[in-house]
Image 1 (cartoon, rainbow, N blue to C red):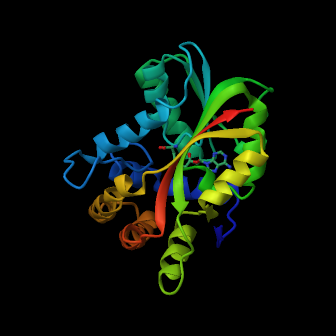
Image 2: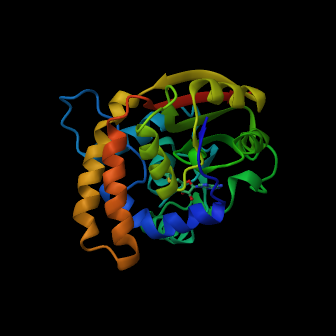
Length: 274
Ligand code: SAH
């Protein structure tokens, strides 16, 4: 595991309070990467990020009317999309008060009364055992210091047989030399705790009550997002509030440098609660 920095949920929430708007605007609405079929795929960032949401949705194996937990719900866009697509109830949690406001406003606008968002730390979620039929975590585990505690907690609140789908950054092999500084800086800026290797994901899931059904590295399908995101962030920096402008420009440079690291992949994991 490449652990550089140990942010608290409070640090993570504060970063998303400041950066969610810029990130969502650079990423076509949600706060996660996109999926392109290949280099010739002309999909827009908005279309590609929605495809990533759909890749997660299609792995949840949940019947209409079931109840899903969205671990790290961002501004609510992916959760609302998934709840509508699968015709299910959804509860999303975030550690950012700004995101909570956005997510609740989005529920109001979309008129989906089976979707609810709360401020909660996934490490201690306080849901009753077996509350959910499935859970997903899109780019949220990388912020969590106690990853095995969170996975154990998810195994407690998802019923036996239920799915967990994880979409997150993957460390393909150790990063050495100068490129380390890029990764150190980007993890600090975005309050990332660690980027896990395949072995770490497998061990942590296996030890916490999950059977892995699928483990696929889609890193090359995701890679086009970083350059597009950097360009959009630079455009947005000019009109960003003072406290966000510098971080946005620094973030754009780092995201661009990150784009070229072959050590960085992106994983889609489907696990089943034992
Ligand atoms: N899944 C969303 C947002 C990704 S951003 C999307 O795809 O658009 C990362 C999310 O993880 C944020 O919503 C952040 O609040 C959440 N997060 C990070 N650490 C968390 C924790 N300990 N508990 C709950 N949510 C957390």
